[in-house]
Length: 154
Image 1 (tube, rainbow, N blue to C red):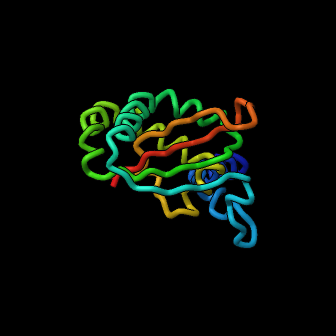
Image 2 (image 1 turned 120 degrees about the horizontal axis):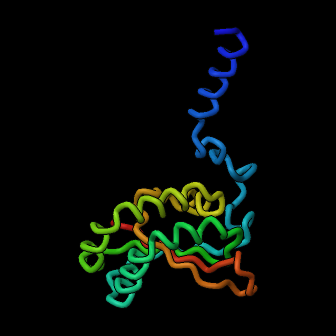
């Protein structure tokens, strides 16, 4: 193998092993509040409300579609993290088991978005805790700006 080919192979290997998370390891400068940087409000809550559990169930059922939608979201007016208590998790458990692949795709899409990654990082949320997400139109009317609710497993 020629030296040029060896260098090309080494360069490809080095680029292929770089994680997307490395590019996002410092998404906001000087410790600025990510909500101010991206212009959204962050809300965190924990619930065992039956109505919220039903919304979480629908978001698990739509996880594959939502993973694709997330790629198109460039702004958010609000990001809500809703941690489900055990009673609510019982409502979504069987659907969650049936849609593992879709939920994994959703987790990957959320983690690869600087907008969502930064919001999760600021609240200490791991992508592996995400079980579903609801995207609603934001106040601006732009299809790329959303109000987001992310459901989390306990």
